[in-house]
Image (cartoon, rainbow, N blue to C red; front, side, top):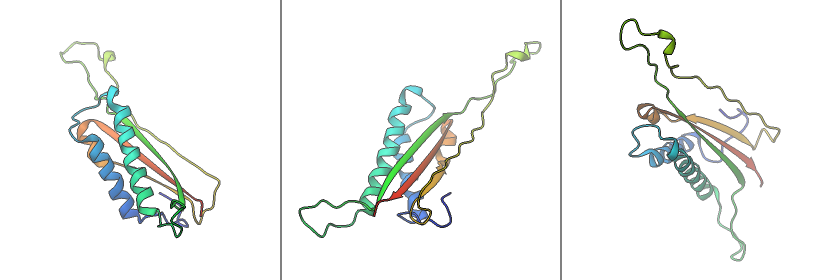
Amino acid sequence: MASDLSAPPVPYTRLKEITESACETALSGVTSYSHADTETWNTTIINNILGALVSETTQSSSSGSTPAQPQFKYVVNSTIIQHAGSTGPTTPGEDSSKKISGRRGMHAASGAYWNNEKDGMWSFKYPGADSKGLDVVVGVIWVWVG
């Protein structure tokens, strides 16, 4: 979650809606993990979130000759993790040491030196990925540029 001092460029509820929509768009029709497709899924998630944030936070330019710019720069990170199912011996007497490891945990952390009142970060785990054998964790960073 972002610092308590920093308000996001859009309300947290809207940020969650944008992120869920991006994940749903990228993963519609997906039934299981496919390493060959993860680059496309991540790119779709990232580009949809960036596009929505820039669109929703860009104010109209007062000068017709200067293109409007958002007051924030954005960084979006998307991580897709495959669920590795736990399998063991299928018949009595099989070697249990051949068991494939089960689902793994993950811990990630970020830190930054910035303006705590204007800049921030937010992370989100997309719940719709569980049924597809995936975890999708998205991080959004915003840096105020005025």
